[in-house]
Image 1 (cartoon, rainbow, N blue to C red):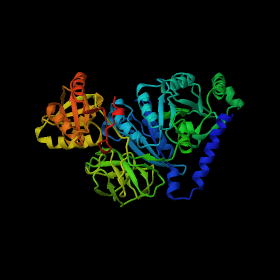
Image 2: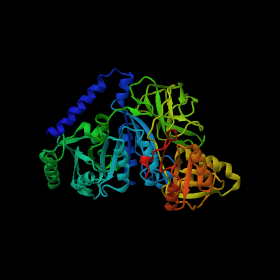
Image 3: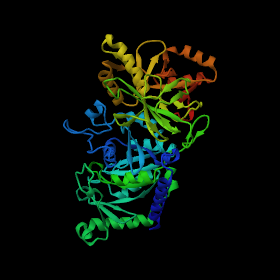
Image 4: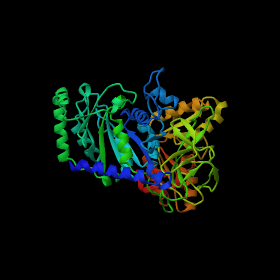
Amino acid sequence: MPAYNCVHTEINQRRITIETSASNSPAAEVLRRRSFAIISHPDAGKTTLTEKLLLYAGAIQIAGSVKARKASRHATSDWMEIEKQRGISVASSVMQMEYRDCIINLLDTPGHQDFSEDTYRVLTAVDSALMVIDAANGVESQTLRLLEVCRARNTPIVTFINKLDREVKPPMELMDEIESALGIEVVPFTWPVGMGKSFAGVIDIANMQMRMFKAGEDRVTEDSHAVIDVNDPALKERLGSDLENALAEVELIKEAMPAFDQEAFLAGRQSPVFFGSAINNFGVREILNTLVELAPSPGSRKALQREVSPSENKFSAVVFKIQANMDPAHRDRVAFLRICSGHFERGMKLKICRNGKEIRTNNALSFLSQRRDILDEAFPGDIIGLPNHGLLRLGDTLTEGEQLQFTGLPFFAPEIFRLVESADPLRSKQLRTGLMQLGEEGAIQVFRPMAGGTMLLGAFGQLQFEVVSHRLQTEYGAEVRLLPARYSLARWVSSDDAVALKKFIQENIHRMAEDVVGAPVFLASHKSELDVAQQRWESIQFHALREHAGLIYQSDLAS
């Protein structure tokens, strides 16, 4: 059918472009890059799929499990002790691998909504996203929230419908649900034959071939790639009505659903859909191939001063994540940078645009989650790490000298507050260090009351407090008590009139705090208190969102 033949035309053109570019030239290296994040509702199978992608790319030999027993391997991307204990991802992790002459930067994100800020920041650093949907549950609340972020940035999305080896919703129903709930056109590239115990495999719609399902695969073998023509009589005899029904649905899809449109996909309006079972290593290769063949290579990125193209010779990058204690033995902090332009070489001197300070890059790192290697060079689209002792902050722009400030890294006003105090007064210094570092990392929001008194933590869910308490104890040796706080909302404040802002702070000093970078914050116990303050102080702007970058406030995104 013409609708699906056009896919192969796009793919072949892309292959030719990649293969004929001058090798090792910056332009060719940009073309080779694919940077994407995996997003989903909790427990949809996102981290399991990450493991299988690493397996297929040859980055690991045997896939780990999210809920592994003591003797088993844990998922590569879940490296924190608390992640291994709870079987969930609480921080995003970065993995770089090579597949089919492409360099893939893969970011696994926390699915739990309590850690959505981390996911939002990661989505600013990638060029596409892989959305994982649990076939039994369909579209869930966190999926909607994450997709809104992707849509706001026009991020291309590939959809993987997971867990077909279980009892699930009919695939046609899932297609309708995705389209209506997410407001995005779907184009199935594969189609399931059977489900649950009768799940037999998927049909490759463009080639009308079927790949047979085999349970329990945690390695890649030759059998993993075996395909059979759908018209094979033995296949029809073996699968009977399940195959007949699937083929009838495929014919309906070809007639009723839109053709794949590369431009619509790149604009985030259309999503290729694949079916499979990540835990059984099934349907993963198709995902990787699609990301290589259809997902965009790094594009231009907006800075306050101008738009920055990846083909530019001068280096620029933005810090989108800071992670403390990846190496517990050294109590280190690593700043994760997305390279936006230029050729990075180890040892080059870079300017931090926020304060003009210079930073050396002798110890730049590449990652496979917690495992790291010293990096000699990198190109636009790559994610690199710089060991950081408090010099770099979230949202910092690094260049070879030009004054640039990349935008779009959000910090949302928290919804739950707790007072934090040390269970052991002798460990107060460790507590202060831990709070400062975890606040800079973005794991929790930390507020210091301007009138003095107990430090305040802000979060989006109870789980965030539990994780931070655990990390303070295990990583910093600071056991803490979390106590109820009288506040229920926070707003950053700014004003064009510096005198008015100073007066506002002085008159409301018992409701004022500073966040981890010293930005002033108004704290209220009830929304009515905020309403009164807004009415009384017309010259003061109250913001539910702050950008990390240069303390830029964006009222239009405030909720």
